[in-house]
Length: 370
Picture (cartoon, rainbow, N blue to C red):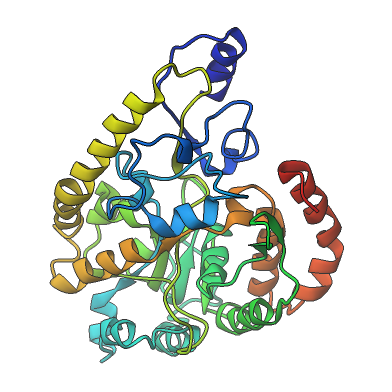
């Protein structure tokens, strides 16, 4: 799609009113003033209204008000591609555990609380080891398919490697204490034998294990909860936000996946005010009329309760982005950290020192700032 758009831009053709690209294309579109317009310069986008994600807009706005891209509810990936946890409610019932909804409500859903739940699930069964096997009987605390899961867990602490300076441009965070503490807690959560399993092939994956009823938690996107595969589960399941680092953290951080498609207006668009008026109205209708119906649809089989809709509303209110991941600056580094956490290696700072020069160079290349 980007190749097609590039050709029309090069030719100066007014073909597309709007274009949606994954956030991890940010280096090409989201921050490319030569290809897309500043959305804040289009008066018919009513960004102050409730049907826009203000947290995302604040995070993605640069300098004195430059906003090259944003998620919206015209394209429901802006809601459905939130990183969330699903949990096996039936397993919790069988273990005599209450679903963590009240913990979430009280602000006490943390890494430590999740770990205490996971420990109850870990059981080697009749297997010789916790090595993943489609015919295995062991059960795990947490199953997932790739590094985005522990990365999303780390993002749950609410602090990010990339922050904005006094001029509102991205820079590398100087004080990493909180992020390091979060990574070390996640290492304690993920690395003990049986606590977590990461696997992803066509034949077998962390998702397969969860569907077999052999994992208490599973990382997914919010919208996946209505998929045919999810609905084949023979147990009740529920939804939760990513846990906080500690109860003192102000709010949960529901991070949008880097693969979420976000809105861009090409520089060749001849009537961006008209485009803004149309998309803004569609977002208004979607936020007020479509999302509530979508939530009921997500709850149709596996999550037949009001608690899950309450959790979905919480996620809608706390959606945000890790600018470094979405701009393609820190994901490779965080993937290394995720693998270290799984291996029990508390090596955040040493790994950071090896990668910080490259990250700073890429920040300067992308944003033109030091």
